[in-house]
Amino acid sequence: MFVEFNELPKNAQVWIYQSTRKFKEDEIIKINEFLKIFVDNWKDHGKKVTGSFLVKYQQFIIIALDNNERNVPGCVTDASIRALREIESVFEVDLLNKFNTAYRESGTIYTVILIEFQQLVKEDKITPQTIVFNGMVSSVKDFETIWEVPANQSWHQRYFN
Image (cartoon, rainbow, N blue to C red; front, side, top):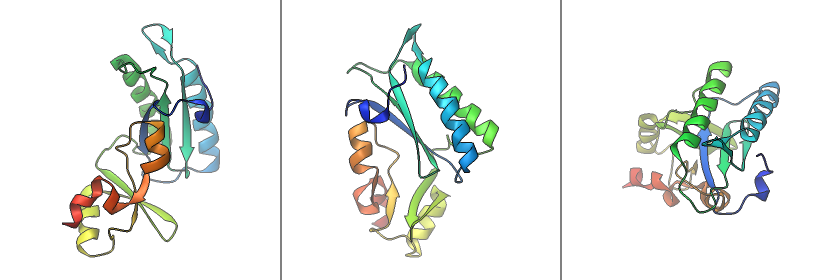
């Protein structure tokens, strides 16, 4: 069952997927329509679950599940991955590659593969103060508080030693 993102409890599970490019406005409309239908019909062994989603900065898809303090069953995660794969196919983007890393520079969001990120750090083009998107967050609360942070406040800090 779909609910507005801001109606989810702070402990709701989130998954963040970053696109390798910004979505166009018409694509976002289609993605929103697709994900609304998906979340409205999202199920755990035949029983509907409560969830939501956001498309943020035209480049990130955030899917959330009110997990009611229980473990998230594999079938729920598998269903969301299938939905993301369909979006990847239709819009010819990469959403599921965990080696992609996003950061913001001068108001622009860039997505690079991890090895490029490391090279940019070595070249001092990415600094500890560069804003990065911490895809490791797992709850609505973390999404709201530590998703966009300086690199030295996320898992990215390991590349500055």
